[in-house]
Image (cartoon, rainbow, N blue to C red; front, side, top):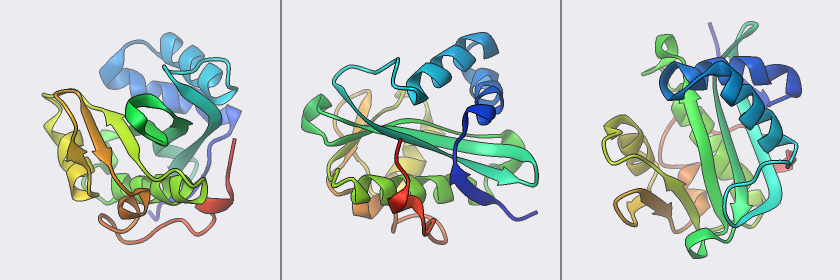
Length: 167
């Protein structure tokens, strides 16, 4: 089934939380965290107000999501907050589509330098980010010097309306 990308809505939060909780804690924690993040009630260090999230759907199911915001952390303009794809859809280009979409949003927000916190042992995420042009900043962080690289290095294309979406 084809994957479609769209802006995340409040009704997507339970699905996003369930995906995140498979590897990173409980659904209750993630429902609260994601919901508050999207409403601007929870912000990572040095985060600015501009933020967004996109979901990849296959039919009525959320297959993955990505979220990010503008920031001042590490001298960056934007931070990739989360990206997760359900196991059944991994290796099918969903993460690439989400990355290119997020890159387009950052570029539309004039956020050039982007950072992401990534566990040193998370080889899969590190490979994804490197495939999309990220470089190692330190043990836990990677950066893109130009967000436009995020939307051209990886997958088969980008979401045309990504630049218009904002939260």
